[in-house]
Length: 354
Ligand code: PMP
Image 1 (cartoon, helix red, strand yellow):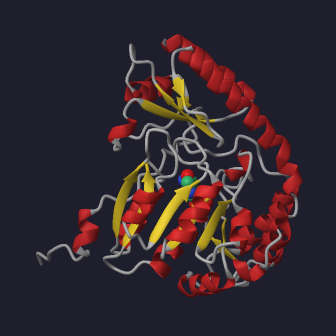
Image 2 (image 1 turned 135 degrees about the horizontal axis):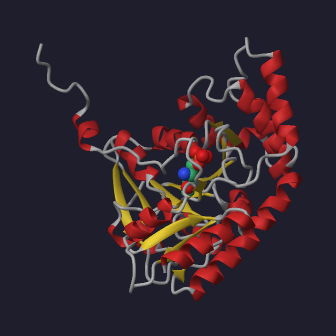
C-alpha cells in the first residue's frame, strides 16, 4: 500500500540534532571534537560500576536516582529535593522542554549556543527564537526579555565560544522574566566561578550540570539539574520511569564521593587551554578567551577555510569540530583541550598545514 509519511508534519520538516562525529575505533585518531575528558575517571568509579554489575543487574534501579541525588546534595550543599538526575544532561534538557513548554510557546537563547536547544524545542512543538550575542558577548538581557520566552537557555561558559557572562546579569534576567531561566553549566568545573549561589535568590532558575566533561564519564550518561523542590517535583513527572540505569547510578555516586580525584585533570586541562590559546594566537588564529575545556578559534584569513582545516586536520589524525550549518561560524573551528602530548601533536599538525 502507498501510505503517506505518517510522521508529524513538523517532525518531517526538522532535521534533527547533528552530534560530533564518533570515529570507528579501528583507525587511530585523536578526538578533539566533542569536549570529552582526555583522562580516565578514578579507579573508585570503575570499581563501583563493576560491583553494581556483579550484584544487582537483575533488579530495576532506584526510579528517581535517589542515591545520586543524595550524593550530589552532599557534594554541592543542596537538598536532594532540589536535584533531578538525567541520562546525560541532554535528558534534563528534554525534561525541561516537556515540563515548561507547550506547543506554540517561545524558547530563546543568546546564539550561537548549544544547538540541541532548538531541536528539543521543535520536538516539543515550540518556537525557537534566536537572540544574537552582541559584539561584546555580554548577556543581551533586553533582547531576551523582548521575545517573551517561556524558557531562556544560557550556557556559562558558553558553547561554542567558551566565554562567561556576568552572574549579576543572569540574576537580573531571572528577576525580570516571567519564564524559566536555564543556566547550563556543562563546562563550569573548568571555569573560575559558578552560579550555584543564585539558586537561593531565584525560584525560576534551573542549573544543569553533566558528568560527561570534568568528571570524564561521557559514556556513562549522567547529568544533574538543580532548582527549587517545586520545579524539580514537576520535572520528575515527565521523566522516563527508570532514566538512569544501575551501573550509571553506582558510577555517578562514586564520582560525586571522589570529586577531589578529578582536580589534577581539571588543572591540567586549564593549563593546556592557556597554552593552546597562546600558541594558536602566535600562528595567526584569533582565539576567544575560554573558560571551558575547548577553544573557539577564527582561522587565519589568508589560508584554509574552517571546513578545510577540519578535513586537513582529520587527514593528520586529529578530529576537531566545525559547525557547517551556522553562517556565523564558517571561519571558526572548535578544539577540545586534550593532554599535553595531544596538544603537542595538534600544534605540530597545525604548523605543517600553515
Ligand atoms: N550542554 C552543553 C552546552 C553541551 O555542550 C553538552 C554536550 N554536548 C551538553 C549539555 C550535554 O552533555 P551530556 O548529555 O553528555 O550531559
